Image 1 (cartoon, rainbow, N blue to C red):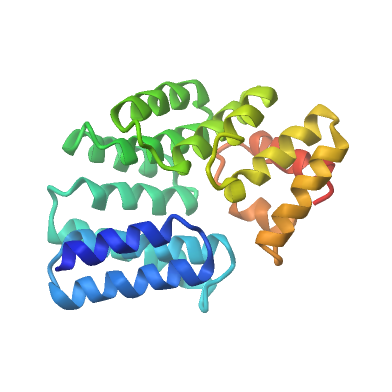
Image 2 (spheres, rainbow, N blue to C red):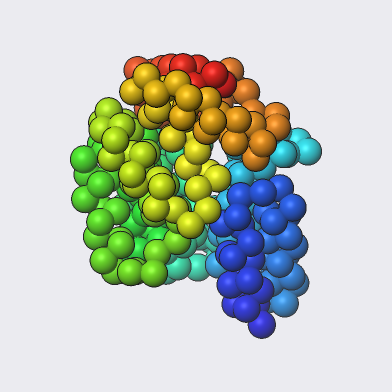
Length: 244
């Protein structure tokens, strides 16, 4: 029963809206209520706090990332053999801008389960945010081969890696392959912005604002988990050129 709750939650959390993420958390809490020692539920719950912080949904933003880290660590304490606990630990460390700890956690996760394509995609995103976008692209292609029915998140991560390398046309064509490109529109806006395609950039910027009415470039500067300031400025410059 606990496993079923986690599976249902996963479908909701990937929609990246506040109601869906909250519903996912409720399902993860149901899983914990069903089995208080089910590590995967604690790992999954960790991500909901991370997303609350990222999108400014948290009731207590000052401690949301601390909560994300705590639930990931609790998952590991309950089951050190479950790769997902270490994956969520990596995700929490990434957004706390603890980059070495993030990569180390993902390394541990993939040693535990070297064929988990979702973990590969997440680690690839972490690599892209630490100046290793070429490696990220290679790892994402491997993840896509392992899971040919991959979710939009893999495509989003791949588009971000292309953007970091200033391969803007590749970033655009990649993001356009998403079934629901909502979370890729920031990359589209920034890519069009850098290409000087003002009409297209402005259109994507407006769609970003529709999806996230409280979106602020200044706040996104704090959210963006890049290791190097030049990568943050590169992305923010593209967003500003798009009119965000």
